[in-house]
Image 1 (cartoon, rainbow, N blue to C red):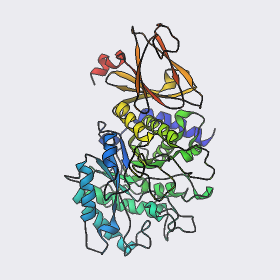
Image 2: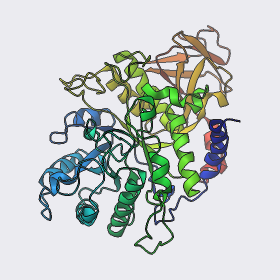
Image 3: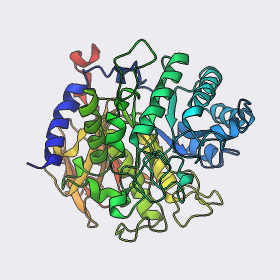
Image 4: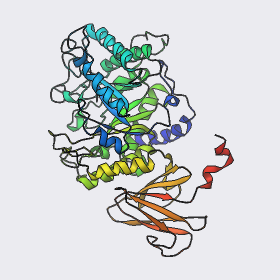
Length: 492
């Protein structure tokens, strides 16, 4: 039996059992229950912190979260002197627009490290802790109310010369790796960060920096394949808090944070769409952390995206274009709900002017792409829905990939063909005079009654057959689902 199959069999059990299992960290971390389930799930990364370009349009599309950066080098360019002017300004703008914020701390001052993105000089770790303490005391309370703190974006990056701009470079094994880099060095950083944050904001959630965890050095990429294990199992000095038993890297974060881009979907392909893609990557990371901690931690993604132009890797066969990008918004968001990711941050709001890879939901001139409307449609239709299960639990139609949700007593489905060829899917009903509401990814909607226009079987026979193509649709059963109103459920 392969390692991957063992992982998925075990994880399937764990995901069932984990809903009732406490995720309280030995090192003083919070449990999964401390995540407020009523907050909206989806957000966006805005590159331009100064002006928050695109943030208003994305708020109109349903984005509720921003992943933002706090640059140590800007705040403390001179050792011992803090200037909070810049972050005060852009964080105030973000909260005034109504966003929740995930704040990623990064960028070492030149006096504190040899590189802006990697290990801090041993003698300056206290400076980092002092800076972080001041930041938490400043931004944990009103009006900012920041509760999620992450550290050094994509810390598994091992090229500190060409990719320092990623934000993190704690990986090793590359000719350009930073001096002293490695998962163990990052674990020490996370121990200091965790203790500092919790001492000043006990209910805060401490996140590892968003892991790339693919495009490895062994494949010609820039990311360290050994980073995660070295980080998780690094032996650390005794905790400075009362939780003295915490002594491994995996004891010093509350949430798993990772990035996902379809260009590397092949790495997570199990042959089953419901355990592949972003779901497969999330499950793998959950299992890796569980093996270290014995706890099922909550998991989020601070970067998920698909460009409308360019190519991420030379062997990438995924077709690019604005239509494909719009499809991926719905597909990746539906899959993220199945993987119980919260929050989910789309990368990014606006196309970067200096890159051939156009990830923005908005073009440089701020005109919306089709993906913008797909984002708005998904958040409108399913952003507040409760995920129930995958389509295969109620249908044997292998030609369609689908995810079943519930909202206000109605079942809702995100569906698409698993190939570029359109197929059909049939819904059966027990209630009389059934109707379906079908919403295209651009928000266009139609009502399909049993036997009426759009019902491909053409008969009022208690079933409705729809055409399902590679472009996702959202389908709402307009009959109230009485299964959602049983006394047992209402009691809760």
